[in-house]
Each structure stands twice: as structure tokens, then as C-alpha cells.
Image 1 (cartoon, rainbow, N blue to C red):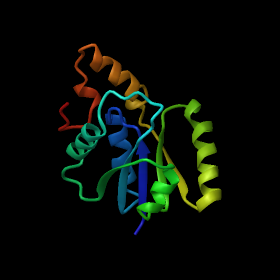
Image 2 (spheres, rainbow, N blue to C red):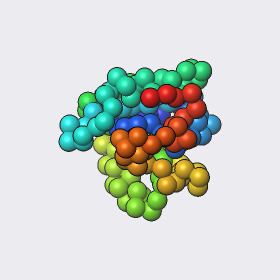
Image 3 (cartoon, rainbow, N blue to C red):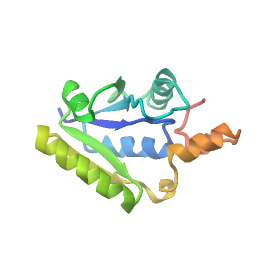
Length: 150
């Protein structure tokens, strides 16, 4: 079985994230969405709320699982028997960071990184922007996966 993890903070999980996972299912038998616990990041939504949002989004897709982790991402991949890390890139600026991490992960564990480019209509969407809009009372429904309610 080809299993990948799709790691992130997902505060919140956006339509861009959703799109990457759906497209990733064309390459992998199963994707485990891993919500990383990062003590240095100030998040708006609790881990439980983020798990709930993602579970809502993929309620009808049994090949997508969701879990949280408090370790190195590559160690999380190994703990769920995933040989791949799925990542999405929005811009050239994301590339160097992702490449550095991918090279280190491959060297340490042979876990490969697969990168999908974000679809053009979602390239401007980031969790930070969506979170800011939400905090100021704006309607963010078009930035969230279908069937997700906050």
C-alpha cells in the first residue's frame, strides 16, 4: 500500500489543502493528514477543532485519515508506516524551504516528498489570510472545503 502523510498546522484547513489531498489520492492508496503541534505557533483553533474540520471535509472518503502529532514530521510518517510526505506549493518562495526539509527527510529515513503545485484559483489562499478574515468577522465559507462549518 502506498501511504502518504500530508502534514501541517491547518489553522484552519482550507480549500487549497483540500484540493491537494484530493489530487494526492490519484497517487496514493491512503493519505494521513497530520496536524502538527508546534508550541511556537499561536493558533486560533484547538487541535480538536482542527481534527473536526478535516473529518467533516473527508467524511465520505475512507482513504483519508486524520491524526495529530507532537514529533518531527518524518517520525510521524514512520509511525503511521508512510513512505511519502505530500506537500503543496503555492509559490517559488515555498520551494527552497520544502526542498531542504525533503532532502533531510530522505537522507535520514528514505521517506520521499511528493510536491503538487496548488491550483491557480487557490494559490492566493493561506491559512493566515483565512484566519485573519475569520477573526474580523468576514464570511470565509468560499475558502473552506465543501460541507465544512466553523
